[in-house]
Length: 374
Image (tube, rainbow, N blue to C red; front, side, top):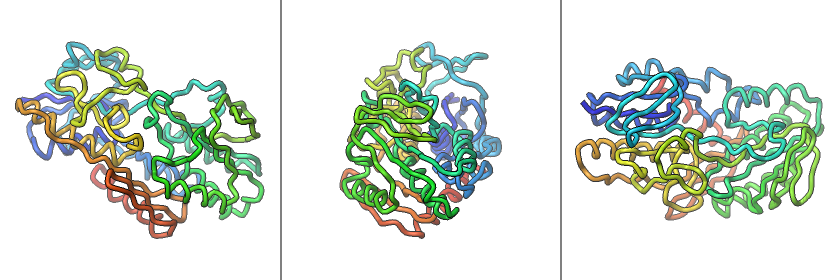
């Protein structure tokens, strides 16, 4: 019997499960993650305004694992051994014939004073803190920004920060207190959202201007303090900082023989194959060949996981890897009541202006996507 281990229960890990089971009903699949649950990250943007709550975002996977005949191990991986044929956790070791690493990444938190900032994509607790702080504020200055991994520019997640920015502006207007707040968007990039395409950059900056959102662009961030953001281009006051740092690989990668990219992620080829035999990677954990704008987002993770799972089955049948993934950026930048659709492929891109239909489309997609795991 084929023994396949998956590390991680996020988008990539679960898509790998579904892809494997579609082709092989009998393989022994073991999935290791801290909890048997999926946190639907795209809906975190709606927590500050109470459009979404925990029940909409955190999905128990017990039923899904039972339907898929998957053994779930609650734990965190600490290292690999025997050329990755052994996965080690603090309490036990698990053997495999093939391994898929889908454990995500971690945020670079080296900036002085970064403890004064909230990183929204760290999960539900982070966005609930944002919600509670905004509710308690009578007014003030709010700074929202992001940065990348300087050694791997694609290892970033900037899109959600535009959504928190525009969503917060909408929320405060709907509450009738926008005039009491100053919103400032900041990033070291001179053209925020450049990976979305030139039209998107113009559209985003135009939207900020229309909403009276200040910008502080093109200056390297030096440090944060409780009441200010400091950059090489000056500093500005703030009462609340929302900041998304660049991403790097998980700490446990250091305890493996896997080849790493300069930015600390797992090096992979177009087939999602790593430097070790029968070890594949998908999602935020990996560094893949492709254009600089290739995104770190759920849609891309799903595409990579599908390819990785198919190549695992081929490898276990002694066939060469042949399945690649489409490089595609696809998102709706939501502002709580409207949404801007943006897509980009190697052949070109498409941007649709803000409209209410896209806001509802994003909510409907979340329901549609999650139904397979409920």
